[in-house]
Image 1 (tube, rainbow, N blue to C red):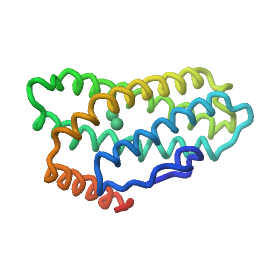
Image 2: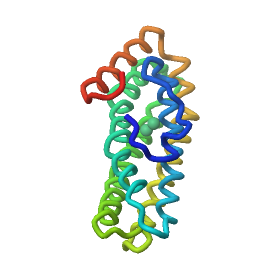
Image 3: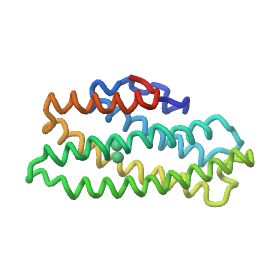
Image 4: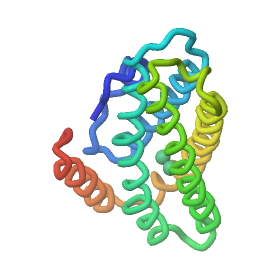
Length: 182
Ligand SMILES: [Fe+2]
Ligand SMILES: [Fe+2]
């Protein structure tokens, strides 16, 4: 599901979960765009409800779903498929800790953005909002870089064709349950 968040949807790669690794890469590209959008919100001078609402929706739906995909499907499969030499456990533990931090930081951002919507003010006039937006963007960028550098290449090497089909089915089913794309 896309929420109309300007740069997040503009030119976003249209990849579906039929190809789960490409799909994760496309999602990461959208998360990078989300980080840019967070910075734009931090710099906003005039209140504009549209990008604020879009960000609240994107965090609530798309980002949450992505973390569930990784925690419920990608990471457990990697743990099963990787060899001792891949040394994956420490990286996966670090990424799961990042997810917890992400959830806390994104909840803070949503609170701040909801305050903006209620008061009809840009984030810069809400105490702590700019810091919350920037902290979330920084954490997310670091996390994405690690996933793209480590997780994606290992998944490409270790997942079998059957694994990819199974992952695809699970990602699609999760979206169907939520009434999203299939
Ligand atoms: Fe990710
Ligand atoms: Fe992640």
